[in-house]
Length: 108
Image 1 (cartoon, helix red, strand yellow):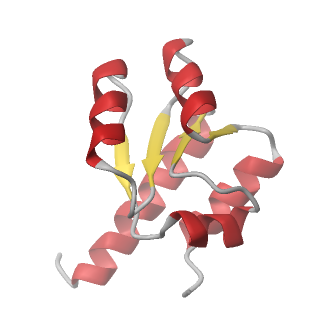
Image 2 (tube, rainbow, N blue to C red):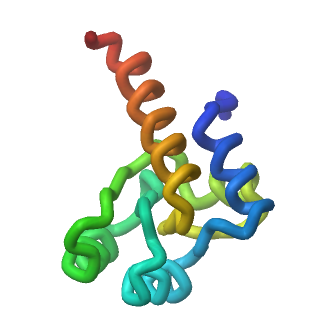
């Protein structure tokens, strides 16, 4: 797996205690309005994405290409859905994901 800056930033946010990882804790974070960004793994089911989309009206959602196993290797926790519960981390992670996608697609 190629090292990506947003995965490093997610690791930093995890060590800072600013992530909720896994379905139940992430959903709880969304319901309590703590979530600032929702990150889905590449192999998460559409049912889960729809469930979180219904619960989170204004929280931005992104889907990364890393699988649950790759997230486990990078962050030390198996999770298909992660919420970032800090404004600064959320904006930086979203920015890095957009940069990676743009660089990967070769557009713009």
